[in-house]
Length: 132
Image (cartoon, rainbow, N blue to C red; front, side, top):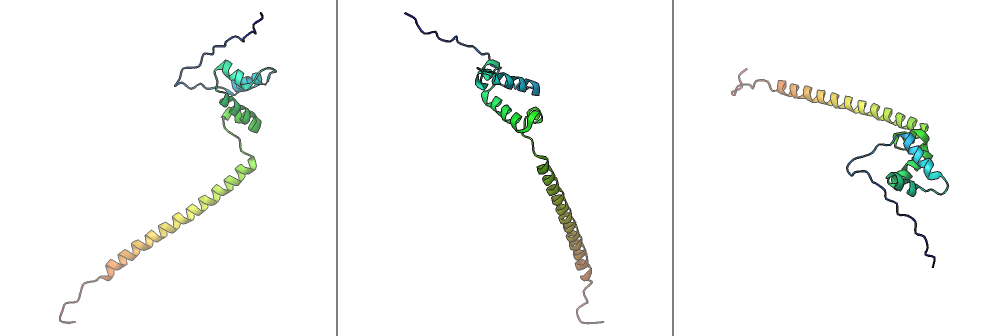
């Protein structure tokens, strides 16, 4: 009888826990290119190299969204128009903060002056008996 062949068992050595590995943009791109080869998948390449498949899926998404810069920074890239809008918003908020800070300083000065005048207006009391 012919018994069906079972695929060989693959033993993958995982990195020691508690130690984070850092991958350069070139390493990430190389692993993603390996996963794109015919007959390969992200899961199989991840197993071979001891990388979490979810991490490789994240790398692929970053590469598709923002290219090399996004992959190297390990974060999504933002459109230039959005950056400009955010810079305008920051300038506006800084201007408003400056105005509010100035208002607080003016009010603090007014309170100080008011307290000084209140103390000055409490002059010596005239003696009882009404003598002038």
